[in-house]
Length: 604
Image 1 (cartoon, rainbow, N blue to C red):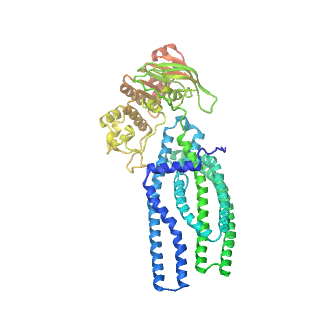
Image 2: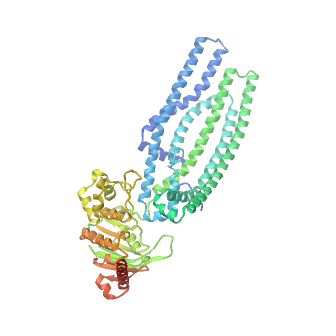
Image 3: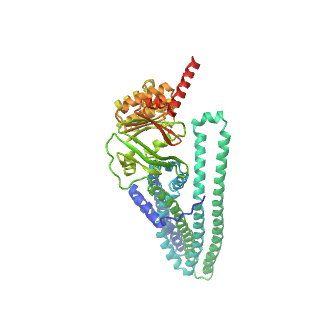
């Protein structure tokens, strides 16, 4: 499943992108690293020149006072430079991390605000995983590029000094060292490219591993793990995917091994030639012992220094590929985002599905074909039908979680695509089948706000109308009680029905202009569901509201009922009209009524 994409940005462009972000998010890093760069560029020459000066004195006049001064100066300067280097490194590393965290925020926002359809698209999920590798540690991607960029600046300053020293000895020696290191560079970058070519396989594998890991450590799966004994199955799958990941890792490491072997061979040959040449100059009296020491140290440092520069450049080019993936992910404009948006009108709202056809991305099966339906202002509409009839899909299209394949959905006669997604979403209060509660307090779960911004009078009213007041009143900390124990050890676990009431209260608190209930009360009994719908309907007042329920008795109070079957609107009218029609709705209603009567007799 490998996808070969040409890098969208050059290494230089990505380096400027990262440096610009560093300036925007943490300017101090430039001050710290400016001083650090000067110190690191000076540091190697302390060990090159001081031994030369000391040897010259020992082989010359041997003045004790000068030797002591040289030794003390060497010790003091080395200590100060070494201390400041370590100290500054400890200061700028947290600054680097802060910069990376800002990019992590950008990645997170992209994940939370992208088109909803992307959350169910494996290609997008793989790209998300791939992009995260550009920000997930200190040594690669964004932070790695920062470290490499700043290191190279210091290295280049020192490099000028090395070149001057080596040139004073022999220009051909310098050329040989450059060629030697360039070979290592090309091999290193080739490995980086190979590693990047495996990004899609790695992302696909890591996504599966992370999913299985979360299952194994999510106690909400605890009952299924034990009753159905799926722990071995999940563990074996996890092991398989980890082994697949290990195999890719081995391939990359073997490539690195080959480069390492070549590096060692080049090093042995290089050192043998260079030091043999230096010894020859000493033997032939063309080089003094102090200068031999200086050149010996300088060439050894030069080789390592230059090799590090080249490897840093190769590493930067590899990091640049990761940053390309990150930027491609963050900067891509969603298909459903509208450039020139219109202002949303004020509610209540009227909707119209006009010749709407829809199929999910990657599927050839149409859920709807030429669906036509009007929802007048302030109407309470019930959507009913058997499982698979297309009820939830209707809500996804109305809420613009998906765009229609053909046709259009109109709000007040205007295509909903003409409005900003975020502004359009603000008009909705919705309770979905799958309730998501947060490991925060009850108040924060309902208001989705911090404590200082909560309207507690409104909050309590919503809790009462959602049927949760009795439960909250039994809790020591009331609405400030945490849900779950993930963050707060004193948190409590709510039942499925109680979690659904939290979601109901959340929708009421938001008080959107369009209310949606998508079978949120499945965990409640029929009577509790009916009472919840009635209370919710009282709060809705004159707003447009859509109710979905598999229990027809819970929605008969609505203005109209739309019955769907296999993606088609088969019946439409009031509860009494549809019963009088004696069609599919009436059959379904009678079947459910008969079931509840039989259940009551069985209980008695």
